[in-house]
Image (cartoon, rainbow, N blue to C red; front, top):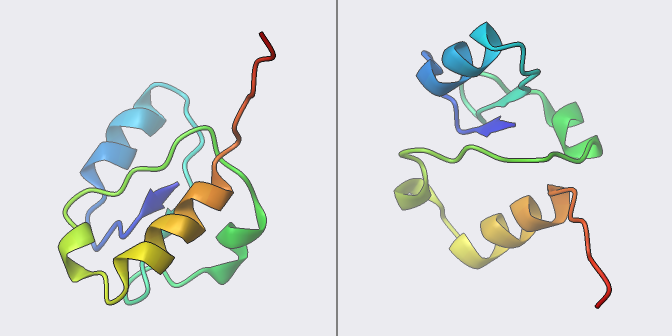
Length: 73
């Protein structure tokens, strides 16, 4: 997911060139709340963190969307 992608998601464009599937989300430009119903291998969050109104809640929300693999040792 490219969280806070804005109007020109450059990183996403590069990933798509290499056959990655990337969902876009931006509350102003790509407001697609259904992206929060999936999990992701990685989340891009570039040049948006300084705009978070409540960073703890935002990072917690993103963390829950990551598909985490836990290895037992």
